[in-house]
Image 1: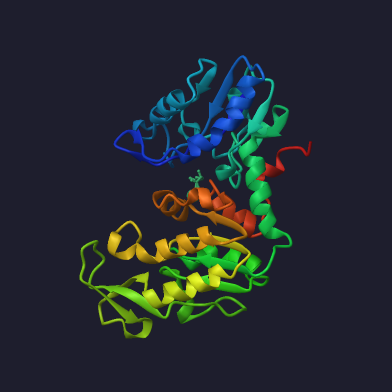
Image 2: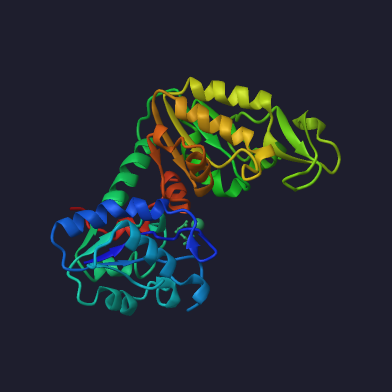
Length: 331
Ligand code: 3PG
Ligand code: MG
């Protein structure tokens, strides 16, 4: 059997720094092994290499898979992007991946927005099925596209408004409140590209420089001293956001409120994460940064779904069809 998983995980010094995606892929592998598969061949891309490149070797991932799932029937292939035919969605590469396999299982939700040989072309080469993770992602994220229980609150953050615009446009109209923090709040304040009102920060944690140990002070957003940067939402905004989130029955949160990797600017993201975790209703978190914050705060168990997809979850919620999903025939 050939399985496409999304094992594109962050590495640090030749080791897997966060194995969330690897762990999320295990239930499908276990299921196939339990069903008596003689070989479970797993493939994935890792990073964005331009060709074969030792810095992007799958070996650290392979080692982690072996630790978590010690079974000789599991074979992890080398980084699919070492072959230029992968991103070209080339059928000859798909045939090579599929060689000797009788079934293809796509469990790579995080890569489903890519029409690549291992996610798209191969689904036309072998009988293709969705894995457990892919199915669950589509079910949980899909609930946000349907009739959601109200109040529905969207929380958006991160650097660039362009990345989130499609989702805000597609879901924002039916949301009871759209809360925007992070750097993208500044862009929206300058000119709101949306057709509805959004809630923006009243105050910010200002920093004298873009540095973890910069001098800081809390100021109203319009009183940011010259040359200073707003690197987190302030305490008043945290209260407002937490209060709006607290009344929700459905929440989708994507993107940090500030530079949460640096403790002086982590409070806003923490406040949002805690508020989302406390919601008595359906809560979904998407995007690698928000997921990382949630895991670091040990709150991941307290939301209904933490998506393993970044771009894929956004494109799905924008209402787009994902090539990796479309290629799988309805069962
Ligand atoms: C991701 O991490 O978003 C997915 O693995 C897709 O990676 P890509 O953006 O390099 O295609
Ligand atoms: Mg990406």
